[in-house]
Image 1: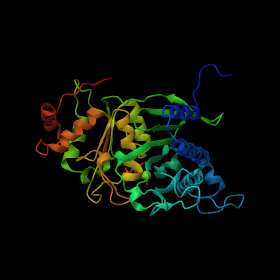
Image 2: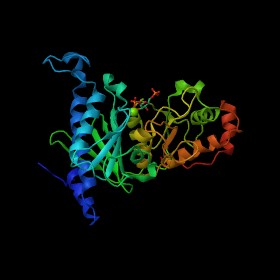
Image 3: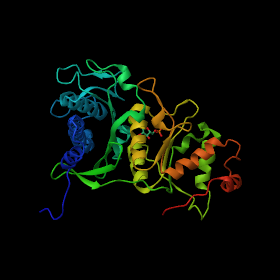
Image 4: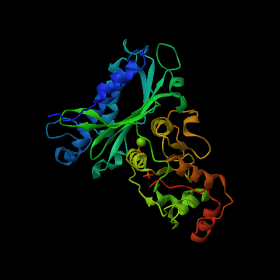
Length: 359
Ligand code: AHM
Ligand code: MG
């Protein structure tokens, strides 16, 4: 029995659309189809533990059906859902070398394109760790007909909407059109995403830093100094911070968004632009974090201001609570502060901006 008011995602989308009397419903239609694909991906992710019983990827399962790798399956589900939506003229995805044009009659002139990472962190599937789908929606630049590469090479500032789905202890969709960020939790018993985290604001400051520290010897001195700073004992700023790194960006980002923290994937030797992709991972997450009051920088500019020149472009990223991003920027901009040994880090603290910790 329903004992309190529940807002389903569907009802929420309708409410939002009513706020814009000139809205055509195309964006709402797109979101509905992304959500449909997400529910199917969720179902398959939940079954992943059975793969050992049913057969490994690339082989046949007990019923003789080919078992598809989950990231390929997720990619296919999103592509077909978006293609039939009729509201999207093409997509670019981390799984495909080039963009995919939808030239079916109902889609060819549609005004939106979507960039996505269908299953981020998919190396974690085997060990039951949270993974996610990340998406960003842009208005096309060309006016009609088949979409072109230029439609995809847009800076994050042009995003119309972005979101992610996290397949975790529960499945959640978090999305924004640039104003509020709202979170919806999937109730599997009714198959509906229900509003559970309205108007998410990320804490101004936090006590969590997320970075793959095993690459320390490849990071710049400035990045290492910030990491050293995070570990220094200091009551006033509630350090040391806690290190938390799952290796699944959606999961690390989601935790930090809610609790306050910073996620970093910097440039390093061998990866001059880091590992993560601008169009499929960094720009959508930057759009979400800014709408939630946070910040995202490459170290030299806001992630959202970076103009892509190729679909699979990577970029360094420092993203999360605004005061923490400002703090890492301080270290990145001041190469002359002493390196991060404990004594030197204590010296840096004197010259670093003073931070108020919110809890
Ligand atoms: P993927 O898109 O191939 O899954 O890779 C992206 C993932 C992110 O989710 C995560 O933050 C990062 O790779 C982890 O990389 P690393 O193992 O180098 O720390
Ligand atoms: Mg990825």
